Image (cartoon, rainbow, N blue to C red):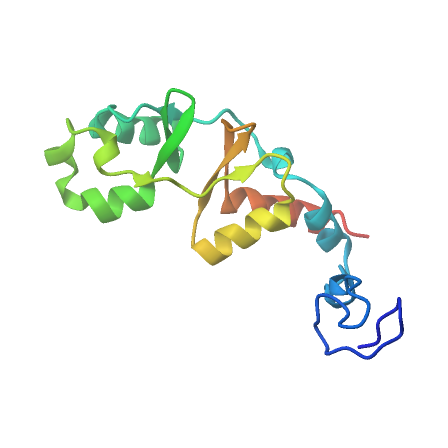
Length: 171
């Protein structure tokens, strides 16, 4: 790869020119080829939020949390201590950690069964970054923060709906 600043030869994929130390990473970044790809790189996570997050305290009983999931037809709740996100409890947690023993644990605190310290994303992050985090981490839900405070939760379904709605409007 030829450096566009000093015209010296560099190894393909180099982050900086070995001769002049100018950044070269922009030369190897994939460029979006469709309107959908451009929007995924440009639009932020905030545009995916459709409703307020459902939050519970760490001491909330498992039975009550399960009822909230069912009553609201949602896939997860965010566990918050004061203003801090300390965990997430999802359908997957219910299946893997409670399973057929759910009634046995109904009065126990949700903090015993939640996923602690969940991965989060800032509201102004690009959608493609959220999609990458979800793919690499195997997450179906990501709490969305603004200035360290929970403002929503996005799901992989939200991203798929976003993509399919953009595909429908492609000329």
